[in-house]
Structures are given as structure tokens and as C-alpha cells.
Image (cartoon, rainbow, N blue to C red; front, side, top):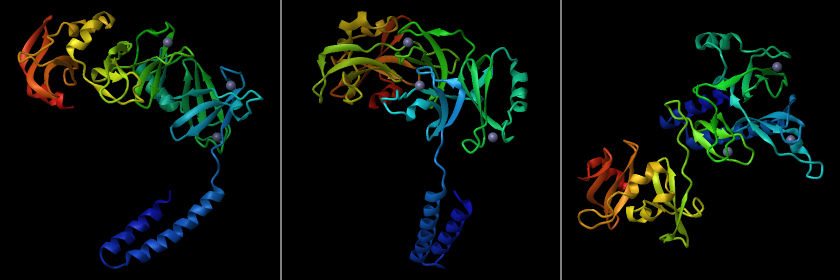
Length: 336
Ligand SMILES: [Zn+2]
Ligand SMILES: [Zn+2]
Ligand SMILES: [Zn+2]
């Protein structure tokens, strides 16, 4: 974008506001200039060419991989992508983690920071500073800052890891393969390395892997209210909830009642067994519903009178359920 162009327009808009210029004239002139620039851009702008990295071969078909830039970031894709199905088209991609997130294993932290600054590699072809990307724990890719105009690149071999986790390699709770620390749009997480396992676990602020996610518990006896579907019990960032079996296609969810989860106690993970032992009804005979407090990150139960808080709630404290009048916080949580 041309900042002079934008600033000029701003100045003119100020004049319109001040009554010095007529807005139609301003817009008309702006539009004419803009269309002309757009036409030149169409003719002269280069396409986003992939840069082949012969040293990195495709884990699926062993053809060389190439670096691509997309609106979502930089990634590698197999050069077999351009082929037809007959020629053996390959759609394999590898996600890259920014080199700023990576550190060499065994490096002293402070020393490493200094080295990182000094070590920003220069392109072997044109001398421009290179950006670095982590491919996996053993390989780091340096790409010329002028990419794709300059195809200069280097592959560095070593032992790398993503900053922020010092613990051991963790085993996938679904399939037993190793999980690898990755960095994504929503932060750092562990992803299973097995080809057909999509399991992930978040990296918590504490530096620990988030506990394994609960497998959804089918509740075929519970009919959805709107959709022609039944519920499953799921565990999310905001605690346990009932969701349509075909969620997220069918977006029907609600909080479960204590009496609804009771028959499924054995299918729940150990840490949720206490919820099946909560009081089923409040002192007025309203059903108790399982709720989650974001503030304390704990579940509690609250009476529900025709979709509104009954004013009673119970909390699990010191190994037993304590009935209390609903606190302000609990009443608020109910509204969401
Ligand atoms: Zn391939
Ligand atoms: Zn270069
Ligand atoms: Zn797995």
C-alpha cells in the first residue's frame, strides 16, 4: 500500500469536513486514481511462486518440498501438488513453526538469546537477512528475506525444541504415539505425530500439558429439543455440556441435569464422578443443573426453575456437596 496516497486522501476528507471541498469531487478524483493503480497492479504484480527446497523431501512421496506463503502463514507443500492425478499428484503439506519460537536443545538461555541475534543468517545468494522456520525437532529452514524474488535458502541440522516446555515427550492418550509441541494460531499445543490421529492437547500457562480430553459420552435416551437428534455429553473449555450428536453441524447444546448424567457415572472420567453424586433436586424440588464457573474453573450445580435460576446452588467442598443460596457470581454464570 502507498501511505502517501492514503494520507493525501485523509487530508482531502478533512477539507470536505471543513466545507472547503465538495465530497463528490473528492471521491470522483480518488476513484479515478485508484482504478488506474489497480489496473497497473493487475499487470505487474508477481504471483506467489513456491520455492523448491531440494534438501527437504516429501514424507509421503519423496519428491522435493517447496515453501509457500499463504494468508495464513508460511508452510511447505509437496512439489507433486502441480501434477495430475495420473502422474501421482501429492497434496502433502508440512506446517512450519516460526524460528523465533524455537531454541536449540542444551543451550544456556541467556547465551542463546545473544547468539540468536548474532546468528541471524545472511542469504548465501544476495546477503539479505534470512527468516527461520522450524520443520521438526531436527531441522530448521532459513529462507531469504527477499523470498520469493530470491530463492536463497539453507537447512540447518541440530536439536531444536519450541520454547516454553521443558518436560518429557508425552505419549498420545488416544493412540500411544509421541506428541510433538507445535505452535498454532491459538497458541502452543501438543499434536499427535501419528498420520491418522488428530489428537491434540493444549500447553497450559503452567508449562504442563492440558489433561486428556474426555471422549464424548453418548446419551441416546436424551432427545434434542429442536433437532431430530439425541445428545452426547462433551467436555469443553467451559466444562461439561450436552451437545447434539451431530454437533457442530447441529448447533444444539445445553447444560446437563444431575439426574441425566447419573446413569452414565461409569462412563465418566474419575475426576467427574463427584458430579454424579450431586443432589438431583434443590430444596424446592427443581432439577439441579451442572454448571461451570470460569472464575474458579470448577463445576457446581444450581437449581433450575423453567430455565431460570431457582436461587439454590451446591458446591463440592472438602469431599462433600454443600448447599448454598446462589451467590451473585453463580447467578451471573447461569445467564450465559
Ligand atoms: Zn509428496
Ligand atoms: Zn537472497
Ligand atoms: Zn495419537
